[in-house]
Length: 209
Image (cartoon, rainbow, N blue to C red; front, side):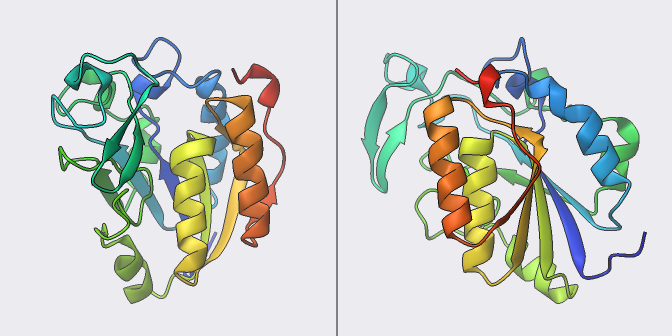
């Protein structure tokens, strides 16, 4: 299929976000058949990959704190996560069929600055540092984006909302997403609708904690 002005953005489909991983998204593995089907429909595919150095500032272990507590960073309140997607570890790899990963034109690695977490594919959590993805897409004439991946209520939603703000037409394929927590999934679904994002299909929130 020829979609020269369109791209599929696959967010953080990595072993550490799948069942059994360090920061598992409930039923995260269930998106893989849909992701594979979506990949067949697009000429341009971009992958994002959480890629943290050991001892990252968003890790609870860096403070001796409980996972999912919060701390204040220079850019605001930060959720403290279990150690995950540490550079070079198996959990930080890609959890995609080889033919899907091989089709990707670009991989954006995020969360590499030890002092700044990064949910969005476009802008890190300080809301200043950009990844360069917007410029890469614009230079190729790509204006229409479809998002799929993990987790819906964090990296997918942050990426999609930022994309709208940058002037892209945005779709989120909900069958190709799963979220971490029911409350935050609902909140981000509302936020995405408010932003004018087209939500395709439905997400199974019954498996969300």
